[in-house]
Length: 139
Image (cartoon, rainbow, N blue to C red; front, top):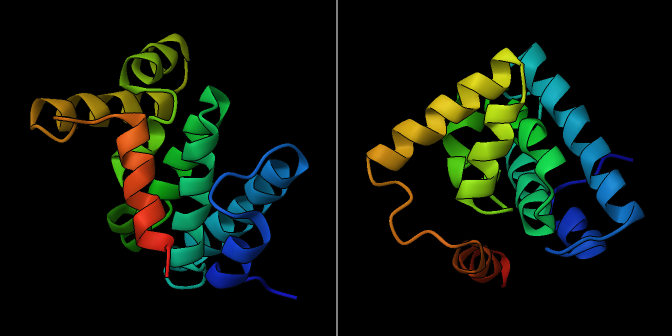
């Protein structure tokens, strides 16, 4: 059975932990593949929610998965905020990306730096961003 955004939110909430995080990652990977095959085949709203859930977990090893989701299509790129890469904070995320010897890490770091320079991280905090998404997803 396919899961939509509402079911995912109900099942895992905004702060999944443990095995639920693994399930969120798996669900995200499925929708990334679908969206990469053809824009609109993946559920962009569900993809965004999965990225918010991973942001809230704050694990650096999820940064490139969130970046891959953002790059899956034009729709995904527009709906998934660059700030969602920074669940561990902007400074730690930049250091992590700098330490990775991968072209996608370099691209993600460059986008972060460009957005930071343009003011996209002014007043950014993990807690504040998490609270904004909690308000967005609360009916």
